[in-house]
Image (cartoon, rainbow, N blue to C red; front, top):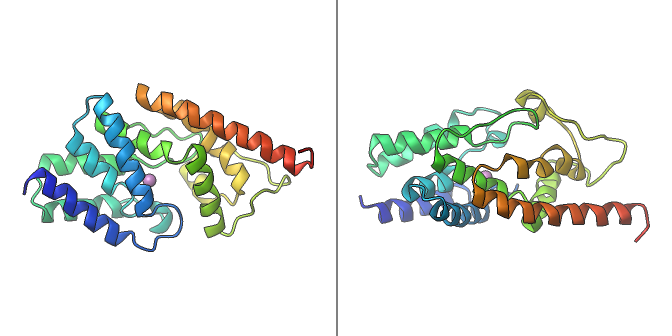
Length: 217
Ligand code: NI
């Protein structure tokens, strides 16, 4: 199968699989990450075929929705790419990206072993930042039944993946526990630049939020 066909068939597969996903990891998220990863991948001179497949398949089964079983997504991706008769070395490179990509807590390092993985991770992280990141943060909080803000619950820096998974938190705390940390976790120069702009937008948003919360503005 030629590369273009693998990509377009994978788009159909992912879209169908994630249909009706209500927590912010839906097809719209995949499309944004895909577009961003392609943009960064071109700048960084990465292997675009690997980047495209990694971006499309990176949330095919997110741990937040598979009861923490991290082997599900790489397995699904491998099965799918085998169906498309993609060669083994490409499959290995793509599944490695999917294995490595998740954010697992503030104090937990998640290094990517390839440039293509770094590009996809940057695309995924950028989608958690800025105006879209704010929207996704509260959409996910609502999905989990979390409060928007509660000053009595203080943000925590999770030092293990277990702790991060088990945390209750609020929408606003999620900024301090994850979103504001992401700009320093970007891999590529292109990603860093874009993350900084989105980061500053979120800081402005939080400043306004807290001022409104205190009835100052
Ligand atoms: Ni994602």
